[in-house]
Image 1 (tube, rainbow, N blue to C red):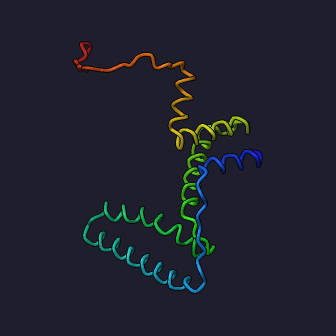
Image 2 (image 1 turned 90 degrees about the vertical axis):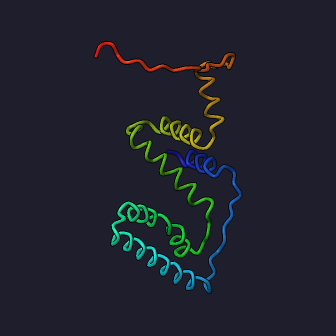
Image 3 (image 1 turned 30 degrees about the vertical axis):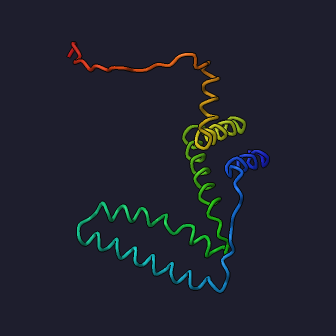
Length: 159
């Protein structure tokens, strides 16, 4: 992919949101780090308690949640920049694009992958444009409406 194309995808993914960020001050870093560590420890203790009492589904749910719950805090502590709006949105977009390109577009040209990426972004983040595109592509003018009034399920005569 060309840098210009990546910039275009990046600009689309932000949805023209105002970038809001805060800087984590050094004086606050230690107290945030301590609270983060204690919260993580308490969550692990809760998971262990669930396991002890035989609530394995609840423990699994909390374990899966705990893998993602502190990601932004760890990033903030590392970088000193708190940017909640863009980080999770971009991660979600690039994860989705990466997942689909690995499965669908392996070995495709850069141009085809770029078009697929645009389609993924449109489908996920601009439902109206996605529907408009397919209505135009399929020639749907909206002159009539199909309404299903009744459905009847009958047993198959051949079995």
